[in-house]
Amino acid sequence: MKQIAITFEQAKRIDLWAVLREIDFGSFQFAVFSFLLGVLLFLATVIAGG
Image 1 (tube, rainbow, N blue to C red):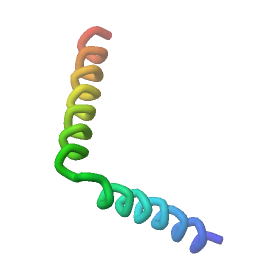
Image 2: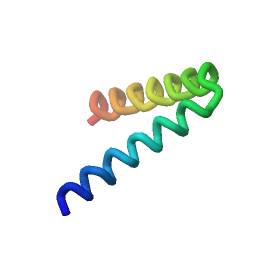
Image 3: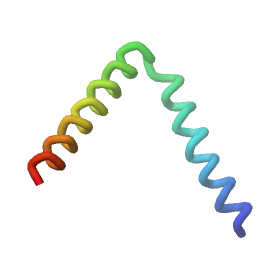
């Protein structure tokens, strides 16, 4: 059963990467970078505020 769980986790990751590869990577990469930057700024604000 453990082997099945590991394979499922790997399959999810592989599927995610397959999806990422199909998307127009320049604009997508920029969108993800902007999103992550926004999340980091939000977390920094929350930590500093709290």
